[in-house]
Length: 289
Image (spheres, rainbow, N blue to C red):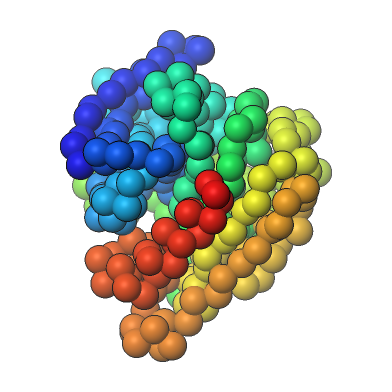
């Protein structure tokens, strides 16, 4: 396996950067969509495992984040929905043009799976595998995490925007730095159980997209101990999605896997190789048969 850095340009001129993990004899290509404000290297061990099982993996940063960040976040007007309407389609086009003869798959975490339906071209997708993709409705969260979320969105965010012009979270270990409109739109969605499908947003501030007309199978892994993507929020999000193929779920219970916790990011830790990653590869293999 070898790695290759790349960059590609969105239709509005924004440059996205990432890396490709390329096996010697690839059998398919995977666009991996990260979670919000997450350092992409968190996913590197997992994607290296997929690459060692002959899948080309594309790991990249959304606009304004990581290697795709701009020089001055306070001046950019990026929104959260730009991830799905502009960034994800650009990566798909880049990969399709680079590997036109390979089956195309999407693997996604959190927001990376939420916004797939905003993409303007869902043709040739063989299937999608998600991790912790749900709404993030506050009242459905455990009290302790709910308070943490309220602090981030309603206290830290406005103060940070006032002082810096963007949400400067990285120095405090909260998440990556983010443009203000990304966090403010995200905050608005989190106030509704149906997330951006709520009538306040859907077809108004965000496009209706193709969420009601997927033509590929979707499988979502979620965990019993996830503070965000718990059962209520998972059900709230996926009741708004329709596909001509199967939409299925796997519930992971940490105790049943001999683990103390998995939560929102534990899917991608090396200890999950024999507990989860092997199953993911089996599912991927079925999708391209």
